[in-house]
Each structure stands twice: as C-alpha cells, then as structure tokens.
Image (cartoon, rainbow, N blue to C red; front, side, top):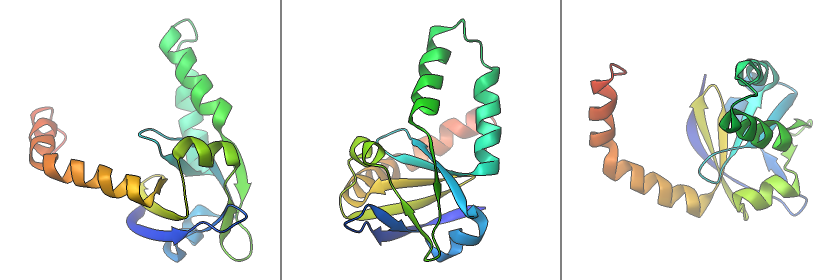
Length: 144
C-alpha cells in the first residue's frame, strides 16, 4: 500500500527520485498517466493493468467514456526506475501538471500522485478545511 507525503526535487534532466518506501512496491517500471486536479498519477504495471481493464470495459459508444479513455491512455507512458530509484518525467506530463522543482509525492493506496509542491499545499489546505463535511457525505453513502 502506498501512503504518506514526501517532498522531492526534480533535477535539471526531469528525473525524480522516488521515496525509498515506494521503490520496492513500485518495481522497476511504473506507468505515469495524466492525473486529475493537475497531478500525475503513478501506477505499478500490475495496478495499471487493472485500471486499463476497467476503463476498457466502458462502452465506447458513450462520449464521456471515449473522452476519458483518450485522456488516460493517450497520456500514459511506461517509465523505468533507474538504479538510483529515479524516474524520468516526460515534458508533456510535467508541463500539464505544472511541475516546477519541488514535487510532492503522495501515496494514495493503489497509486502515487505527483504534484507541484505549492499546488499540493494549496489543494491540501482546501481539503483540510472541508474534511468534516467530506466525511459526513461519505458516511451518508456508507463509505465510512
């Protein structure tokens, strides 16, 4: 399980060192995909297979399904984890997520998310202010 929040530096070659606690679980190859809320999703190859399978099951006759599948699959890329535990973030994903130098690497159970540190701080602050209401809504639908 991927959990926790880590701040790492993106080097001049667009390489990001993965948190040590994530390296063993992520394996030697990861899948980066456009995330939501201006993030990049990072999956293990196995987890990406599960996500891809679920997305592929959606009807291609529905415009929303086609659009989202194009968004996810079209922007996804497999990247190797080098001997130093680093990944290379492609420019198109880096630019889309607005990544600068300091990157927040967030564990979200079955995936990690990569955020620009300042964008993450702003988002996290907003969510923290709503945490009680979010928990209330989730409790009403039986999640918590």
